[in-house]
Image 1 (cartoon, rainbow, N blue to C red):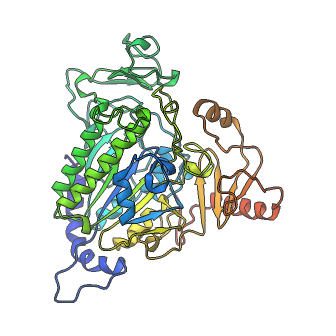
Image 2 (image 1 turned 120 degrees about the vertical axis):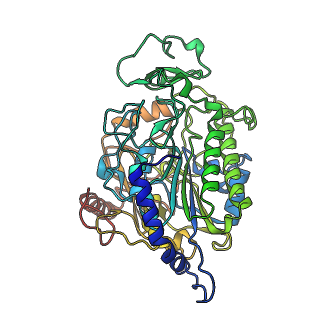
Image 3 (image 1 turned 90 degrees about the vertical axis):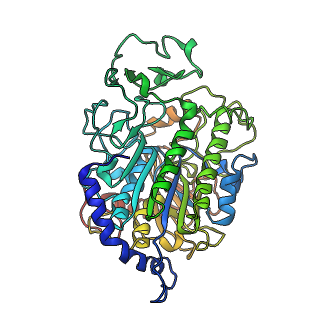
Length: 531
């Protein structure tokens, strides 16, 4: 895959400088004794981060799902480390991805769900997870959904698009620019649209229509799935999207082929880097809307398109794990499997997700879902697997994706600079199952902020203007109220009994602690400064 000249030169230098030292240090960082002096050096572990979109705590068999939707993921959990209190960094996708890659809570950058033509959210001067692992000698790749913005605010989709992931430490890039329900509906390889015909240039508008092409609003009879008004602009592959797109006909994706295309690119990355230590960020589109699984999976679950998309996602996960195994890479690879936020059923398309749900409970035993301040907004299925190193067990440690940067920094023996990763805690021992000690405090971010500390969950009083939108349009309780909420999760995991008026001293303590964390430039010990 193409890289910029500067990026390629930088990565060759940093790998050559770091690889030998890292190979000797990695066993110590993982809690194992180093090899004897006369033994060949142990290679650093590869890292594969499998990031599912909108997968709920209760969508996975290993987390209590009754339906047999996820046999491959269940096997991964049975042989690895299954977390019961692991969290995405936020209850929506863009903020979660921002925090994961930067080690900074997304509210510090006012990050919200981005439109499809947004500029790059992460400053290229930031030291991302990909930068850090690249500095340690890793080949770094991303395959799948991005949704962190591209360019500097006025993207020409017909040329080189920068800045983007190449400027954030990724060597190999194959992207869905934003989301499947937003234009442009094209793939990016490196920094260019794949299969674009220069004679058929792309034009994008998130304002007025570009031409008189049919839309979901004007021609609903052309749609494979009915859509709400927000998702009723340009029709691509029988699905109407958010935003208007003209041109680029030969570059437009086919939804049913997406899972196979992304899997193929991920396996190609593994093949290209079998001799390297590598970091692969495999960022699913499934099970985000529009849910259009391949014909192989249509009707498989009896739970409509959402259930079939989960089955497809599970199959892809199994194929990726098998690819590691058949190449002899599994015992040299740390696999982290998780989701960007909690579940949502009706998210803009009529795909029978609600009607075909049956007794399945996507949020498991928790209240809320995607967008929500309640636990199901961020408490997500999370599994760590490293055959021969991680012992099969369950962990109740409180961990967050915002901590992956600092934790993997220690695994790769790369020091954090004073301005890196403002909120990322080094919890490597917890991530590898060598300790049950997780975070003492954790901010849960949605349309408001909540603070976890011990048994207590405090949700800050906030304007409730988003409550009606989420409850009415999405069928999810946002958790936004104009009064403080306090829950004892040991006694009330469902967050039904607000004890704020009975424990005012706890509310005051947590409200003060949360505000102190918000006002600080960062919460990581040793962090100095901010963006």
